Length: 207
Image 1 (cartoon, helix red, strand yellow):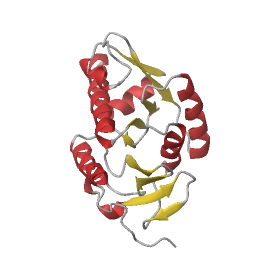
Image 2 (image 1 turned 45 degrees about the vertical axis):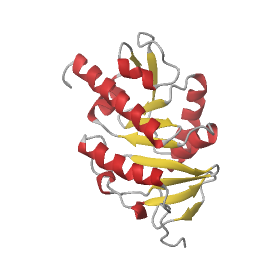
Image 3 (image 1 turned 90 degrees about the horizontal axis):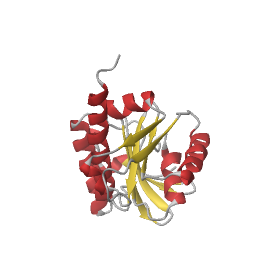
């Protein structure tokens, strides 16, 4: 049985995730116990929020250390139900250092309405490394949700081979965005949440 061991261990990047949880909750992006955050600690290990914890009230003990093979190495509790999606992203791209998942009203509603989301004309699109012209569309894939995380991870992995913009949406569920470090992942989340909210306002109220 893993012992209660803080994986924070003086790593300031994990302290950033705690602060992101407070900021995101204040903005309504991680209601109740929704969302999950992770960080690459070593090439083959990550820290990830444990299941059922409120992201606006994160503490060091709320992070577990998990190997890319799925093994729990340190911490007390159960890793997020969606850990397999995080592991898939870290395994497929060694440059990913942080993955953030949010459940805002805008990303939830739009992911139910559109099979893919094309964003265009927003200056904040430039936080994505391959976007130098805001008039060139940024296409976010939307994947149907599935309660089988292994199956869902395989399907998303295949879809991202065709188009990997640095983020995706699960229909009716939320946004996943990542970056080389927590700051870049946060910037992508903030940029996308702004654009998705603008798109939702443009479409009008939910019927």
